[in-house]
Length: 328
Ligand SMILES: [Zn+2]
Image (cartoon, rainbow, N blue to C red):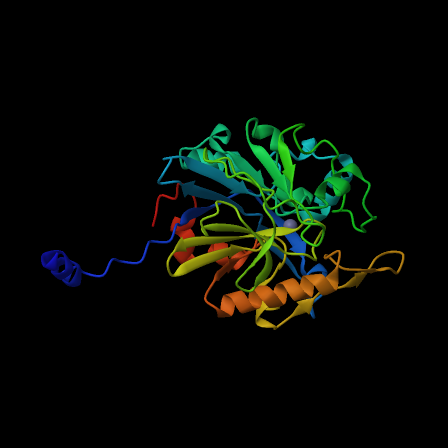
């Protein structure tokens, strides 16, 4: 009895349980060029810049089941432009110069993976420059935010701009999940916990840190889908834990230019040929609130990467963070 007590007293304090992490790698999924006035203000009407349309590979390893779950967040540009619907092909003319080689598939292969290895494709939103070629992922389950299927089916409110054309057959029949509306009635919280690594996307949206609406995908704090309203109905982001001290936030099109985070620029607006005021965000005020939240996350030390983040891509310290990168 006494010796047991002594042993307990002498035993070193047990370390805190390690937090579960995921790995995140960027995937080169094409480049295109943007007129800057459509994104930031003030800026010269002629200013253009060529930006990536980044995809990301996220890998989660379940130490109990041994299963690795692989997710690709966004598929970038479609390799064969002619496979876009005609209105998008017309719009693409205004986005030159543009390259689609390598595409997301080639970038996966560079690191030794194939589309069949990808369990889930999560779309930040369903604009043409993020949806890539879903036909290239014949076994993956596709995940979209609430309202995305209404856009694809053409039953949503009209959105202005040539980039807002949606393909009704984009999502593979019977192989996609549309998340619940974070502001709507929450689904029954008595969901069953699957143990095979199949994710439950229908858990209730819950606050996490600064983000009021998140889904803890693996129920272990390693990976959250974050509701990020403003850019397009169903726009969602990802918050991933890479280590105890490193979280990364994949911002999709919540922000198109780092100067919006620093406050150096404001969200751009312009008049179309009919004199209508246009904005790249469907709901500018909600987009502004989302940007404010991202700014706070960055101040907290979270790394922010948005889909068209040319500065992140060009920073040499990130070279080794592309999947299959030869140099570290
Ligand atoms: Zn985009």
